[in-house]
Length: 594
Image 1: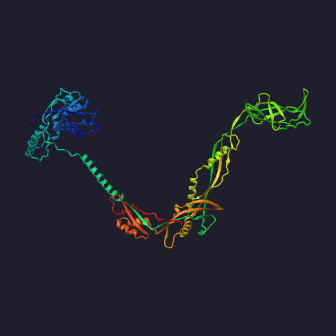
Image 2 (image 1 turned 120 degrees about the vertical axis):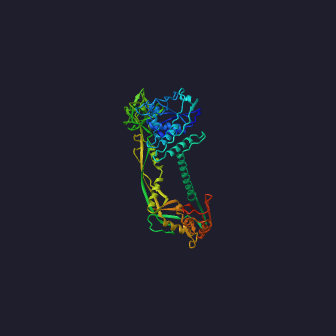
């Protein structure tokens, strides 16, 4: 066997997972591009606890011409590595060495190495000789410089022998010695191939499966795109011009709940009434104040000037007296009658009150205490003067409700949004088969009921109101008779038909009560001409060419022109699906009331 010297400047470090199988580890070693491969093993790597797996790893490394070093400190793996002469290092910085192999009685390592290609004991001697020659070529061992660490080996020169692949010979007893010899000769010749020979590459089935999946996805995407382009996107819009006329009418209707039949000449239409009663509340904070303290009391004396022939009139009980205190005027009420008698003082005669009279402040509060004698004016009596004092008034200011607070709470009820109530009444009329006429919506006049009367002590007031809402409706057939009568005054209906009464867009205004009936103005636009069913036309022209579809539509009476537009740009005919065809009838010309 020829020897060759290989120099490598690279090292590959492969970390093995605890769940990796021996086939996975072998694939990782073979896929490495470095000549020195360091396998970093996890603790308790079960896959290499088998001598068979260790031999498989060793042989495949030799076959791939790799210098394999196991990086591990597991004591249980060292004897197994030594039995197959595998290099081991504790770390990547340690020097590799082959651990000692275990010595078993009556058993030799060489016999284990030859176990995979052992020939049957009964095979011819020549065959056994050929087998030995082949195995000898496979057992040439690589040599590493054990004086260097694993990292240093990557930069050094490694002397190795060319590693030959061992060929297991068939152990068939029927094979002749000559055949076995020829097989051994072929093995020997195969080892002489040059280093440039390429290895047989194993197909990458994962990549094949990926490409296959991408191909399937792409094919499905093309099918979906085709369906979208042919079935979903194509649309056609058909615009039809006709000789139809729009007739504007504005009849006056009298909606009478008591009527039973339509009076087209008088515009009387039987009406259906729908009512609903709602209870609303509005709240406002009390803004008034009231002094609930004690009123001041006291007494005054009165005089009525110089004596005359006639004595002054008495001041009756309940008369008002006013006094100015601290730039404010306060009123006091007398509690008894006051009469006057003449009195002589210093040679002068004057009228004075017979005695003092008690007074009480009109309103409670400490502000009406005079704090001493003051002058009082007697209401309506300019000839009488009074003086005296009051005391004992106290303050106790509380919050009270004013009428303005009640009005504020009531205004909040008036601002309620009635949209939902109108919708409720409208839905009820529709459910009864009537067309709701929103202009007839009315609300009853409520009677506010405040929770607290004006002037009462409270922090807030709540006003409650019950309001009854009403709306009228009419049967569509009755309204159509009114429309027909109004249209006939402008268009000869013996030659044309009303194709749209326009009731869905009609409006009503200027409602006025007339007893239990309501009169309203109706504004409506009816369409007169030939009747065309757009849904039926779409089905008739579905899947037709432009010329054929145009001919079908023009065959209907009253059609003057047809325009068909397609989208997207590649569509050249009407789609087969009628739902993709939109038919518009152009707006008719308008006939005025004149």
